Length: 152
Picture 1 (cartoon, rainbow, N blue to C red):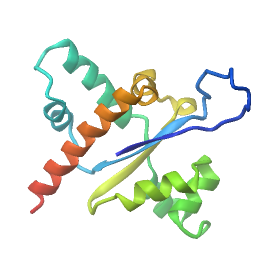
Picture 2 (picture 1 turned 60 degrees about the vertical axis):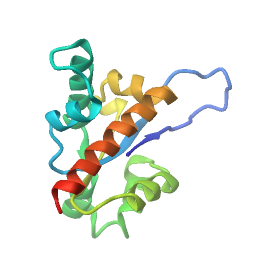
Picture 3 (picture 1 turned 135 degrees about the vertical axis):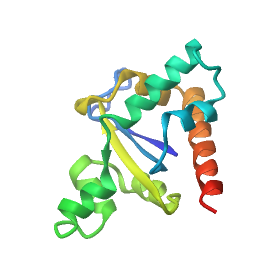
């Protein structure tokens, strides 16, 4: 599951640009590989689609922060819980973090990234467009289901 995090700093209805503090929270299996991602996306090997999906996978995984690990290693004494940590450290609304953690399965990680910390515009293109966001969530759902079946 991927949830878009939008930090609205302007009440101007004409404000159409993504804020650099905007980002996403994503939950996926700890052992998610590029191959899992490619299979779930149903793209043909060595096609343009596989290149785009590979870029998307790397953009999601490379510069994102595993917030569960970060919280347990460095911030668990400072913040009451993970939701409070995400709210105060990354300005992630409680509604969004609670939704992601409610859907979290055992053995999954939660990654966070924003455009200030190097999130690729490839990801932005996927999460800004509702159809693409649904497609990405469908891919993540299939990866999660496959991981769940393999862990039985």
